[in-house]
Image (tube, rainbow over the protein chains, first blue to last red):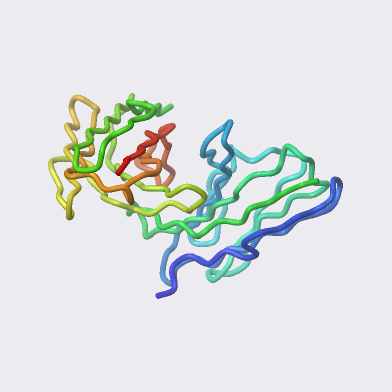
Length: 112
Length: 109
């Protein structure tokens, strides 16, 4: 079991470019979560899926952020027209229903 | 909604001393998890302890559900224990959890 896999580990984009982050949950885990972590804001919930269906996206900035889970083996977080304030570590986690969450190594996004 | 407070916000110890970290939450929890994050690293699950007492290695977590608090005791701290400790509580018996702001632990040799 490789754990939760996130790619890329680091991404640098220019202001206004698009960034797509990938997450592969642990096989068999039905819940997938996305978080954002910065020094100032700490760990913020963005969105989560259960059995590939979006359940709660209350943490997602509405205009430029979107997340999909097209199949049970991966989820993507897309940020359009990236801004410097989007710079953060984006963390993906997965879990069995009602069970503890396991986190990936994160993607460090830097927007210049 | 669920609110999670951790104390202290930071803690400095000498190697060999014990650490006591606290987590208080505003609503009944059916899931409570303690995580460790090394500087620049990701989150590693330490213990899942919604009630009672659990031990693993030098870690002991005690959760008193009706008082809405949990503690994490680290015995005989080591320099490699340095990092941030986060507790996370479920919200309304869903999969979603809310994280505390963490306790930053520094253990000096």
